[in-house]
Image (cartoon, rainbow over all chains, first blue to last red):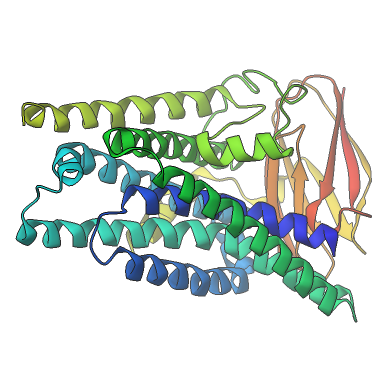
Length: 271
Length: 105
């Protein structure tokens, strides 16, 4: 039961961190909560479908379908987060001052919300499908252990949600002056980390060269399976043994989004 | 739909499962063989054959690899090039019994 709780916690935590950051970043967008819940539900439904079709996905592309699937899901999430951040830097100042016009805010709020829906949905989809498979495996092999499994799963889920909510509540306490800068930075690092993970999947599928493998090894000092390493992995994409290619992806995405934010933010600085 | 096209585009890049370098079998939540010797300094194509009815996740911190293998199915995973040494792996869904190591020489 304890083992179940830990594994479920690990999966839920990763999704919870992503959800807490994007929901904090979109706190002022009208109708946000409804979209957030829609994203959650879509992600959960998708998880069950993905878990049920693991076989089909895996046999795709000669046995590396799973890696491709993960890399595509991550790639879409990176694009969405990039778009969010660049949009925010051109409108963030107005949002912060509550000086936006109602008509434009509703229209733009809607596209922000669809981004929120997609990012939340994808985060839940990726982590959720693994959890479903894992729980199914236990349920199928341990006859009679189903109650313990459900209980462990529940504890893991609640613990993951608790950490996610704590991060969310903490973010909301950031004073308004720094709020958009802070959440923008977090989203930026989140996107860079996802790009690095996407690269990792493509290397695992042998579709990208790893270059230096690994470029460094900090697994002794800060193991990725420890709590700190896990948190850092979800937050900023920490990898204890990254390939050179992952670092290239990380830095490139970081630089491209940061540049986009700077360019989008510039003309409005004088306001 | 675009995603499907993207995957189809990538298909020719991927070699078929038939020419795997090494095979690991999962049976009764155990890896067979539990120790696999591979050459160091070379990229390796590993075929994992899950003969159990339940899914398993091949995971190794030292190899930096993680992959779910559905029940009664096979999957391909690329590792290395590795430096000489011992790289332990396990099955995350059945960690108590599913343990093993790759030894690169």
